[in-house]
Image: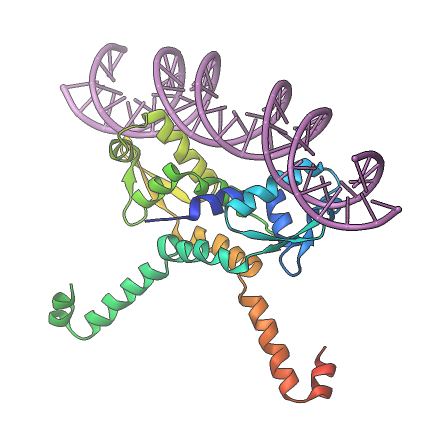
Length: 115
Length: 115
DNA sequence: CCCATAGTTTAGTTTTAACTATATTAATGT
DNA sequence: ACATTAATATAGTTAAAACTAAACTATGGG
């Protein structure tokens, strides 16, 4: 029912990883640059976060000489958004209510038939 | 920047809690009924999950005699959805590209002025 | 008041996440 | 080949999450 959102939720749950994802959202950025942007985390920790994000499919890396450029896979956030909409938002629920209301406006018989 | 999504992410990250939230999504349901619907979790654990969901504002409880009826606060999922859209989806990004494209169509000068 | 039912809370344990420090791999320049 | 830079991987530690079992609280019926 919720096929692949678990790793996405796990990845985005961590504020540090959200920050890292933001850092590579617009333009590709090297792991080292990310590390320098986050003063109080070791390089190793950053690399581990990047691995989680990569495993979740939220970022991708391209080799560029001896550094690795990370970029957010922007579309990868879509499924989570979609899941949120489908499963949890009240949009569908309201749609249903609206439909029933419409049906009842067309008269009791029509409303009963539509159920 | 992301004001209150942390507890929501923490709460929804756990599959068990997602299931519990689903159980009280449509109609109010007692804690005991939730427990009975989740065979391999103790009552205590269910109660703890409910507390997390309650603290996150995702469910509310009404007393009904000696039982407590839980119901999902459907609208509470909105902020998370909104945050996802604003922060992470590529919609804004595409909107920006689209605007620049439009500007460039109106001629180089207009495009330059719009920047 | 006493007992049963419905839930919550607490204490303690196990599992998992996040981190540091260190070792290791891979690419480049000399 | 060797040293340097950029990054990943691993081992071990600490902190947080999830769970169980048992104690506790509150409500309603006799």
